[in-house]
Amino acid sequence: MYYTKFPHIDQLLRYTFVDKDVRGELVQLSNSYRRFFLGRAYPRAVNRMLGELMAATSLLTATLKFEGHISLQIHGDGPVNFITVNGNHKQELRGLARVRDEVSEDLSTVKELLGPNALLVITITPERGERYQGVVAAEGDTIASLIEAYFNKSEQLRTRIWLFADGEFASGIMLQVLPAAGTSDDDFDHLVHLTDTITEHEIYVLSGEEILHRLYHQEKLELYPPQRVRFKCTCSRKNTLNALASVSPEELEEILLADSVITMTCDYCNEKYQFTEPELREELLRR
Image 1 (cartoon, one colour):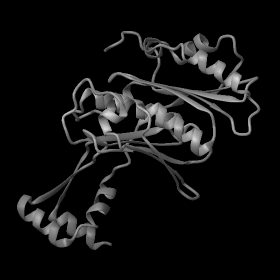
Image 2 (image 1 turned 180 degrees about the vertical axis):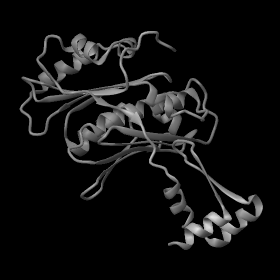
Image 3 (image 1 turned 135 degrees about the vertical axis):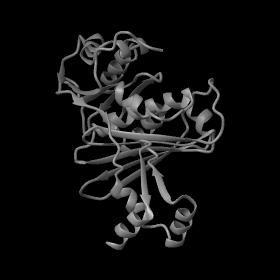
C-alpha cells in the first residue's frame, strides 16, 4: 500500500511526560526500511515482520545510556527460521531474514512464521563493558508482545510497544515507566489508553510532532531533538578478508581451481567482494 502523504524522513523522537515518570519514543521509517530489501525477494509477510523488528530495535537502542550495539534475533523452526536486526546508539540499523520454506500471504504472527518454539534473543554490547544477553520464549503472537514480556520479566519495567509495517513504511511507539519512578499504574494505563487510539493510517501519514499532539495534547510533554535513523552495514573488504583467513588453505585452493576467483556476498547488504589468487596470497601473507 502506498500513501501519497508521508512528510517525515526516517527519524526517532524521544519525549517524557513532565508530571509523570514515563518516557516515550516514536520512530518512523521509510527509506531505511526499504533499503533492507534491496536486491532481495522476501515474501511480503517477512518484509512486514522485518519492518516491525527494525522499528523495535530503533526504539530499544534509544534507551541505551552508553555507546554500543543492540541486536534483536528471533530463532525458530517455522518457514522463517531466523530474523534479526542490529542497531547502535547512532541509530544505524541493518538486518536480514532466512526463509527455508514457502511463506503464504496469510501468515502474520510470530508463531506462524517462526514456529511454536521461537525464541527472542536480545543482546546488548557496550563498547566498554560486559555484554548482556536476555532470552524470551515466544509466548505471544507479536514482536511487541515478546519485547513487553522481556521488560516486564527481566527489567521489571512496565512497557508497552506498538509496531506497524506494511512493506513501504515501518513505525513504532514505546511507553515505559522510568526506573525508580513514582508514577501510579493508573497514570501509565491512562497514557496507554491514549496511545491505543493511534491508527495505522495516521502513523504513516502524519509527522511525528502531529502524532504526539494528536495523542497527548492534554498532557505536558518535553520533546527532545529528533535523531536520524538510517540503514548502515558494517561489512568491508577488510572484514571479508578476515573471514576468509579462517578458511583452510586447501578449501580456498579448491574454490580457486574451480572458479579462479572467490566471491563473498554480505548477508545484510548484498554487497559482493571478489578475491583472485594473487590478491589472497598477498593479503594473507601479510598477516
